[in-house]
Image (cartoon, rainbow, N blue to C red; front, side, top):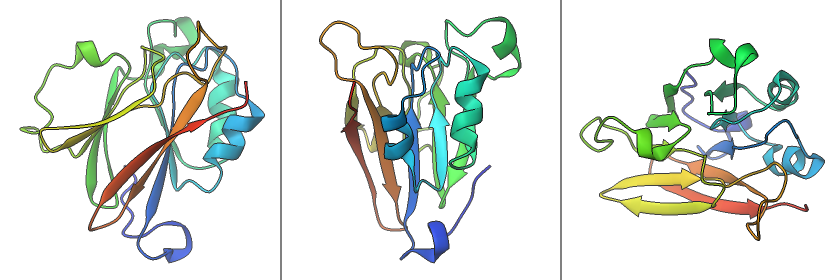
Length: 165
């Protein structure tokens, strides 16, 4: 659990969550740069190699879930994680189609997922859904991206950050 009332060094009560998914074994320098300064990092699965998690842990505290390509070494990772950041509840899973609860009824403010490789930030029924897209090898014409979520006591804002591929 990462429950902080303020961001790094008490920065005006802003907590920054870096979100990455579908790295498939590749941790790009541009992803590391985009996630720098995060108070926490969430990896929404399809990690590919444990070295990716080691690189992310060097930036900030890390929470990760297992994706459908994460076998053997990743069996210790959960399928879903619930955490609190700056008083806001997050639900993290790899494939949004496998969600087994109503996030609003469950009291979640944010749902983080991956799997589709399609970056998306969307409010539905008062819950913010964030899919950072894929930070691994480019697939089709989809962008290579991560996301940043800024959380304050008053607001939640997320944006997609496209990376150099």
